[in-house]
View (tube, helix red, strand yellow):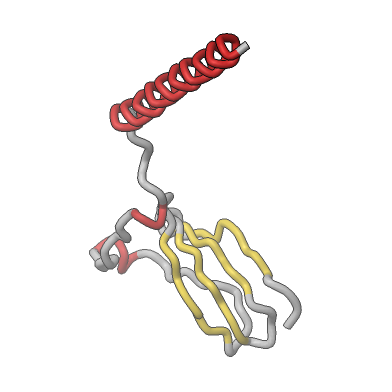
Length: 117
């Protein structure tokens, strides 16, 4: 009886060793794959572009006018990885809101209202 118990225990130990070995190989394979094929950096890790310098073309263009009520102020501006700017607005007797601005085309691409005033 003791022989069968020890054989079963030996088989279980060998089986777990094989599983640990295969798991380690899979982990090393994933690490090597990620090193060989890196993913693009996250938006938070990307550097923000420098300030816009007015050139001769900029002076000839008309100003971008955002239709917001008087008393509206900019709370924050966040640069996105795709080149758009997310601008948080507050005040003016309206609920807080966020607009997404595309400086390249000089257009507001989205508007999000964050609740009641």
